Image (cartoon, rainbow, N blue to C red):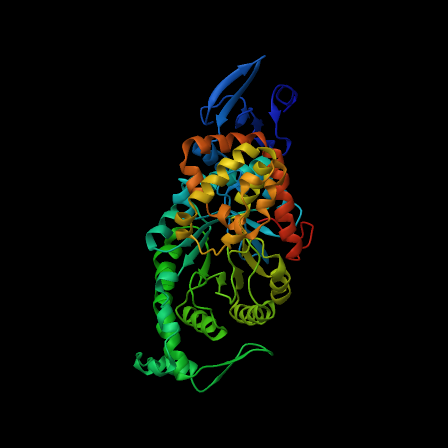
Length: 483
């Protein structure tokens, strides 16, 4: 179909033009918002019929009905399970605005994205639903003409009900947070107290005691009775929970789902032996999963680089990867944004087969854009972040050095972006999104400014996530096949 009229009279996103039978469907910039435009009239189209200069078309708001329509007609708009791919990255998007910048990266690097990635905590703080999160990713891939496939992650879910709700929305990945079923007190119980713990069943003792567990040329594990007692006390309930969710939720859900096991949201560092124990017990129960996120030593805090001993981390990643490889899944790294000093370790020790989550980066890059281009608004955002910090930190593990927080009133506008490079202020801003979005007036001003500067935001995300890809050693080029 000749689209000259539409290209002349509308601001058409060129990569979004797709055939729809004998008609065409594409996205247009309507100034204060984007809309879906379909040539012709049909009662099956969402939106309002329009006519102009002898041309019939239908113009649709980017609402849930429009997202459903796109998913019904364009398979690449439907979330897919991607974790079986070699290298995958969860980017998340708390605002529903980051897709353009993210997808510019994923078009250039051989890595598959999980675009729709939100935890129940983030959904509550942003007042969004999982449907809205997935819909925004659907619009992003259609607008960008990205056909390689993307995942949708119900992130850090803690209950059967949360898992079922996310699956009903079409999530193709479930990250199960086992923290409430891990006994941290048993993990630090003095050795002399271990005999008070229940004696493991005979079949468990036979599986793990008095034998060497060979996991490759460089990793051999041995388990003593005290260690077995401790592991059973620490992880026994979490293994039951993981299996329950698998059989009650994932298997009956009716579509393919990647299963990720999160052991990282605890105070308990996951030893290689504990990792093997959990994985082996799940295998015996028939539970299949795609990734496991251990709790590494050191700190993977939000929005800043790794804090800890990189040499120790290298040996941990090496051991955990050997276990994951033995069982046929891959290691996942949570709170992975900005861990530039150890990205090389992740790639080197896993041979590029890993999943990494970088969710908070898109929010911080949005603030960086506003600090540069809307300094008066940014000062209001920063003041809210600072005032609400003590309340906000209840939801996140962050440890900013408050003595390094500068007096923003003494900073010239041109220096405001420096606050996004300082570890303490990055963390303060990182966890403030909920309080900022709770302020109706501030929220409105924020989204109006982001719409105005959407090109700058896309450029900032492209540079920042692209830097992640480079430091992670991800090759350029579309080497992998489409989903």
